[in-house]
Amino acid sequence: MKSCDRLVVNVQVATMQPGTPYGAIRDAALAIRAGRIAWVGERRAMPADLAAREELDGRGCWLTPGLVDCHTHLVYAGNRADEFEQRLGGASYEDIARAGGGIMATVRATRAASEDELVAASPPRLRRLLDEGVTTVEIKSGYGLDTANELKLLRAARRLGEAGRIDVRTTLLAAHALPPEYEGRADAYVALVCDEIVPAAAQAQLADAVDVFCERIGFSAGQTRRVFEAARAQGLRVKLHADQLSDSGGAALAAEFAALSADHLECASEAGVKAMARAGTVAVLLPGAFYCLRETRLPPIDALRTHEVPMAIATDCNPGTSPVTSLLLMLNMACTLFRLTPEEALAGTTRAAARALGLADRGVLAPGLRADLALWNIGSPAELAYAVGANPCVGIVRDGDVARWEN
Image 1 (cartoon, rainbow, N blue to C red):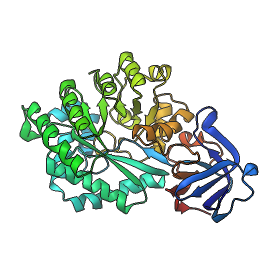
Image 2: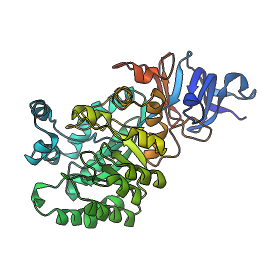
Image 3: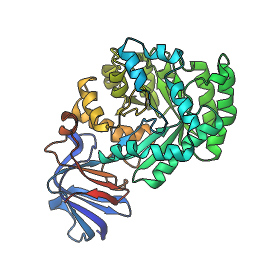
Image 4: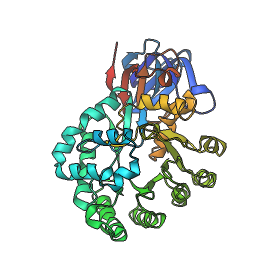
């Protein structure tokens, strides 16, 4: 065994490798070399010739993969607290959207903001995720709804990743809502998305994937298919806001295009779940939106388990339906609202969430994978989903570099 850059000792490790509960290793050590995990195992089995440039004492805490927030709309301007009041007064999400609020309210504020203003407004939201052990975050566009503003949002998201201590993945969501200038001409807007916005984002290398809001207040299955075909032509993978408010066949459509993920899924059918299983599409569950919208229909958790569809958990951070910047809170809500086990919830923010972004180099702790780590002052991994409002994160390593380590 050659020398390594860093050696983490005196830790309990939840590798999140399937097969045993949490993939746990007691009294463990983990070696890092060139940003990758070089070795992990029981400390007593550590190679005798292993030498480290720096040793990190875990003080008996638990080490997990860095958390992955695989569905956010984190870059935007303005807020929609007024809509929160309207919903409490009895208005539905669809009522507000049809009255010109909802997504379009954020579109108006975001179009009016410069790229620099968006970059300046977003770090507080991003920092709260980072403080909770998140090392990778996906950020969608979708509040521009024209070529210039969609690219502005994607550039702002990429700049956040370059400036921060977090890996940002960007998703083009130009088909998020119908902009007012295209009222009554949805197909014409879809043509703009397919013929201009998707190619422009691909050519500028600003998007890692393409997403669509496939819903009765969004875009039809046929329109979604057109956007997905445009993405495929540009070599981009796809994701889908699917079956949140109605069963529009979104889960099956996502599977048809081998989508990385289908997200929300409260109204998805078992046939859609089976299609996702065959395609290897991840289910991304968003308990924050479920809670904020006071939904009552649960995602098909039993069907997802039966057909062994990986279940990821994300914040859905957005100004209207999930103003959430705590992935740890989503762990608790996934358990209390959706009845996931604490282990399923943690897997949903590590192993499954990485897969939902098409990232095979993280999400578990194993030799050769990226050294994204989070250290927690807890007695067992279940505590991450148990304590509401707590943040026991005491250490973060991203890509092998120490972002924070409390001694």
